[in-house]
Image (cartoon, rainbow, N blue to C red; front, side, top):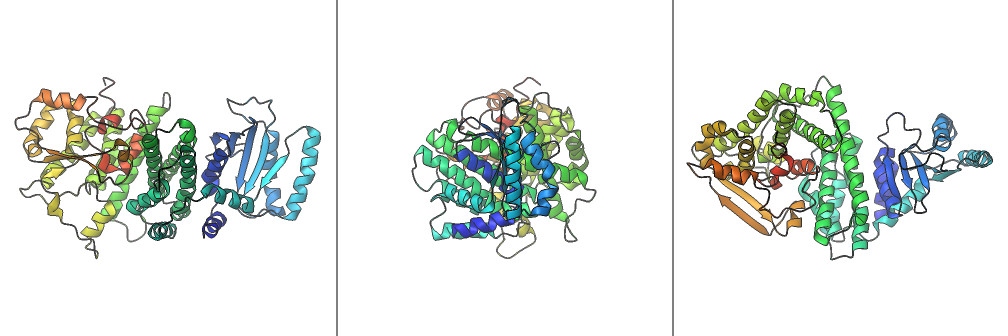
Length: 526
């Protein structure tokens, strides 16, 4: 069964689709990945740059489909560049002879093989590296070897895998079955650290398979979320087993690069289109929820780069888009949307627009405290409910009914939002809203053990529920909002810019403690 699944995926994907799994294969063979192409200009025929286990630099060029004589002639220049142009990378001496490897997920005709043999004879005479070739049948064997025995073994788990695999790709990622699937691969038993390393490799390949329906139609947000979830689960393994970086870091970095590349594609599409609607049926809640997701993810990406790239300048277009779309074209569907709006607020603050930044936070507080107030509120769904579930309820779809009154009187995100304004010393703003704020019970769930923070569901933990005081001491608020300890957060989440992505994808993990990780300006004295 696994051979058929892998073969079907491999023959129907393109070079971008199998690039990450191929990198993971190289890692499993003790290669060190130095560079992975974004498939832009000036790549000089080198999609992947790596160092093999013998310390020899390697340049890989990836293609898709069968390679016949006509196609081979079209890419002759790229092949020449792959072989003749030295690898230009800071850690590699340009005078060092490198290996050149051509990879395709299809077949190569006999004519092309004969041409390759002739070329290699000439390259050898000139002192240049010979061209090595990996074909689809070889790739298939390599990918199956990585899987080992790590596919789900329970029938119900395997059914989930197939359902994800057969998705049409147009919907948002259904996180519950996807995370259940990952857990069936990663948490099946207590494992040795080398076995965990293999499980991580297998999970990357399997994730690429199940996200392929979204990749094929360039549905960016489910792809971003899928890889973000996998990153989170890798960090859960790191925390649970105390893994050294040699077991996971290269795989983690590959996935982060994939996430960033996918957000770049989302950015390019968003700013290249005049009409952001999707078909004649688009509009209302669906349109507004999509705009909200896009602006939230693009804001998180800018904040991520600001923290990781020296002297990075924020893309002004993202900030301008927040100003353009925030009023009237975004939608706070429930607390699962809170992190998206927080990212917009933080980006506006980073751009010096404290008025817009504070307004976004105030609007969220007003919305939560008015709609979740027992006195006339309609109810705001908590962060455990997805936009799909809420939209289905609003459109009265079968089996989608929700009891909105069950959310009255409580909020999981109120404290995190109040803390942001407290750290900005916005006492007057809070005083105007405080009466309604004090009516709402603050809820927080702390997973136990702490590594469970990175998983979608956790059945063991501490549920904390309390009210603000009325009147409330400002000093007590400030002390709580600026306190740097008091919660058992995973070490791999602290000072990790991945937290911007994590909190969007796991909105039920946003609370007064985790929001401090992304709301950094108060610490820096801005």
